[in-house]
Amino acid sequence: MMTADVMAAGGDIRLERLTALADRAAALSALEEIFFASTSRTEFASDADRAAFLSTWTGWFVAEAPRDIWMAVAADGLVVGYLTGCKDSAGSVELAQRIPKYEVFADHFAAYPAHFHVNVRPGWRQHGLGRQLVDRFAEDCRADGLSGVHLVTAVFARNVEFYQRAGFTDACQRGPLLFLGRRLNP
Image (cartoon, rainbow, N blue to C red):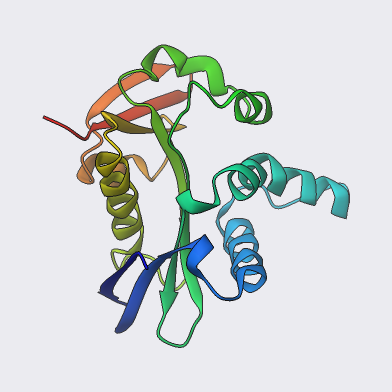
């Protein structure tokens, strides 16, 4: 089983693939809870609108790349963070159709083929869990022979410094969006 142990927030945390968890439904419920606690969008016209928003940002990953979803799990079983990953940004046509502005940085996908989204439960942030999830996914991508990993965020987002500290130093700005890339192989 692919597991990494880390210390954070005063307890043992293990990183596990979604597919390795015994109770996948509970893990996905926790992912949804963390997602909505982390997103800046707080109002929805209906439950269907809320579900569609979640599906836009997590649905493809759950259906098509569940082995590339990493969960941070506390000793008591509480899921305290997650990372959804895609190892083939250029080849993920359906994902490109779902996520707004996905194609804006397509010219960088060859050098940085993998991308991800990471969120940590409030109260568990600022303890290194996000970095552990990012590093675990990057190592997984490196083991698969990928040359780089990237993310897209807003130019003035508070997470930019976090990603720069995590080695995402190759940057490209287009409008309000910022592409950050991390090379995996020298």
